[in-house]
Each structure stands twice: as C-alpha cells, then as structure tokens.
Image (cartoon, rainbow, N blue to C red):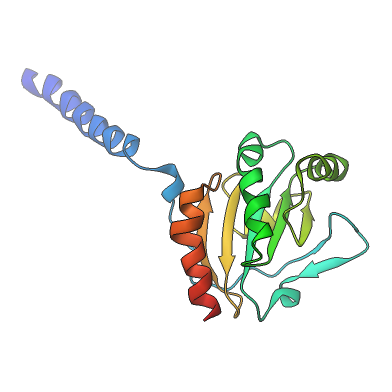
Length: 176
C-alpha cells in the first residue's frame, strides 16, 4: 500500500512532464485557425485616415485581398513593416490594415514616419473586429479570396520566406 503513495504522484509527474515537452516543441505561429475556409466576419469600420468614411466586408467582395493586423505600439509590427512596404510596391494584392486597439493619432504618426503599405487602414480601437477574426495578438496577416473566404492566416511578423513560399503562390492561385 505504501508503494502507491510514491508511484501515483511519480506517474502524474511523468505525464505532466510529457505534456510540457510536447508543448515546448510546438510552433506558436502554427496555431490552427477555425476561420480558415470560413467567410470573413461581418464588419464595418471607420478608415484611419478619414473616420467619416467606412469600409465593410461588402466593399471588399469580388477581389483577393490581404488584411494585416497591426498597431503603433507593437514592436513586432515595426519589424515586419519595411517588408510590407516593399511588398505593397509590387502591387500583387491590395493590402488593408486593421489598426488594432490603437490611438488614431499614434497610428497616423507611425504610418507617416515608417511608410504606409495599406490601400486603407481600418480603425478597430475597441478590438472587436480583431476578436471576430480570431486575432491572438499583433501582427497577424490574413489572405481572403474573391468570395470573401479566409484562405490563410499567419501569426507574428511576416518574413520574406512566408511571402515568397506561402502568400505569393496562394495569391496567384486565387487570382487565376
């Protein structure tokens, strides 16, 4: 009977250690999104540059587009931003920004200082649309097809490899 006093806690410890080992080997950028293959959530948000104008899901229907979730307070967004600016110059896909939980003045100053890769940025000051998109944190990037279906999600800063190996081929395929 005394053996079970030691074996049960040891077995539980080994099981927990196994879960920890598996978890530490997972890539946090590969969190599966339940929205892949589903329609874009309904939204209508003011434009960052002109809050009197709004952009909605319906305004973007019929074209392949990229949504990049960003914020002026986001350090990783600053890391990916030059890459986005360069990618936007190539005009492969319209890029829309979702300025997430940010102050309008800070976001406008950030874009003025670092360059603006977005056809338009939407102001999501309360973060509700970001939550509807399943945003875990910024930056995150989505590719949406002509029917308004989410086809791709990347968590974290974009890299040249992700653009070249994943996003560009997908955009070509969706525009074919």
